[in-house]
Image 1 (cartoon, rainbow, N blue to C red):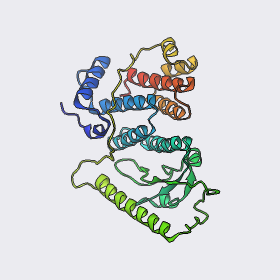
Image 2 (cartoon, rainbow, N blue to C red):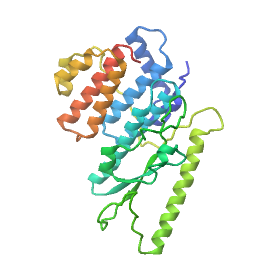
Image 3 (cartoon, rainbow, N blue to C red):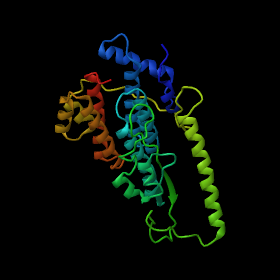
Image 4 (cartoon, rainbow, N blue to C red):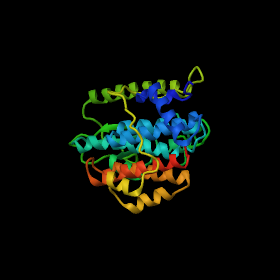
Length: 304
């Protein structure tokens, strides 16, 4: 049976064989002959997020969450706002990794073809740390409606390299220092013009396609994501503690939850905490454990 939502997973290297394997596993787990494509897609997203989190791949996590937000909005699965927040968060974390390597960047908000609320912060500039703390994107008062839910913010960050001789980062409330050489101004103008053209073309292709299909922003991956085999839904607190460590009370709480929305919040919170930890540390492993426990519990009570 053809998978209705294949368009959301092609860019992540999820082929037909992996999709049918996941469909078979869900069918056996819930003793259901037919697993809906929506439930199958949600399960695939959860596995992709876990795999990317284990690899600490911020770029991949950002793109997965954005695609998941599109899916949630199109299918009325849930309000996509928190998924858009996760996508923006991991995009900033990708730039934070570059800063940790010695490079400095500023995050400038671009509100291209956005609602009035979003336009109010167009051009504002933040350091990466400021943006992570304030999380201005997605805009909390956005009114843009892409499919079913209002608030699908289409603003994005434009990252600009900060030169070493800059004493401080300018904000939207103060004029930016002008380059000393005219050639610098010309180069900046050319870059901005090229970016505007690319962005305009992407927006047209993504949100106003000729046919009814939804275009998903893609980028070439160096390798496909291999979906790991899920842990059995009945995993105990002791088993999680043995494999991942952490706080047994947290696992006990997660495994006792019966509300799908609350479990998804636990998963998202663990994912956000993961971004604050360094790979290889105990805290990093704990966060993965909490994500895994939340995902398994959602499967166990048939959230998807």
